[in-house]
Length: 479
Image (cartoon, rainbow, N blue to C red; front, side, top):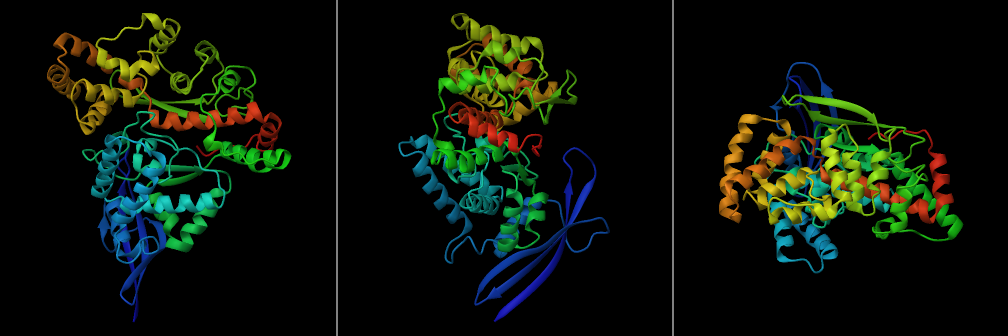
């Protein structure tokens, strides 16, 4: 016998930086047929009236309930659980990406899966993996990643991101920390122009017409990126037709000197961030002042002064990432230390030997939030979760709370590495000074990879690449 059930629920989602509430009416239809239940989200709309039904302030928990009620019926076979499906997909992706990995890497994967389970996010990751798999089957260009998500090994094994978090020393806890409240998924997927409507059509057909609106409530956004369209058009249309070749952009050499020479030259027209002739979009940087108050700065992606890039002259991906991270509204001394050290590498010194493996790729400078966390862990003995909490307080200049962590760091350094209090205090003082300017390496690694791929295309297929650039000239990305 088939049973249909329709229900309305109002969700109250608190804004992260305000006191207002945004309420949603979520209408679902549940169908039970021969003992198997399937569920679709038939409508999701913002509601401004009085509360009706059940008011829930935890969207992730509510969404997890929908997944358990049958939203995942098309993804989870009979006799299996969503968690088992997630584990199977992760193991398969892990074996493909890490055939010779150490036990520590696999231990990290199992740990991440456990945290995702505890956070009630198993269903969300399965659905994201599902629509990205569909998008790629339709030959849509997807970005390497965005935000803190590339630090998630699960996302990498599922094919959601393309940046190797192990190779880049990225932190899972920077994205998801069991000791930190998680109000939403906070995931952004960038696709080529026209890709979002195709994905929304797929989501609506498979999960219900209200599914795209439900993803918005969960802060899972799909943005369209012009640069991805340029890459796709250059490869699929121009190169394929003129050269008769199919380029697999994900498989190109990431250490090609010719690509870095191009980025340091005046031939960067058409390349994201480096196009001085068409800075068609703006980016927003946020940083706190000495009192812990945050301020926004809106600047073109390309600064008028290119001295920083000309001085650094990036020759590796590490130097490219550092150059982009430092090209912000930062104090002169923060940028100056890196510029001095890259020119005088023989003079670089470290307060202790444990700092060298953490900071050697940035020439002794603390540039990334993940480096702050590693220093707290490897020297102070902090857990990854605790290092993330301390990193957040350091960046926000919460003086009293930070001083409590200082005591833990100094004591932990003596116990873990035998470092004496004056040295540990000096290291912690560097973190206090630098953490507020540090950037999320997970995001910059993805951003830099896309820049490198565009530059590679221009080096080896200049006319085809520039033809695609001209086609999309003046159009803006949503990022």
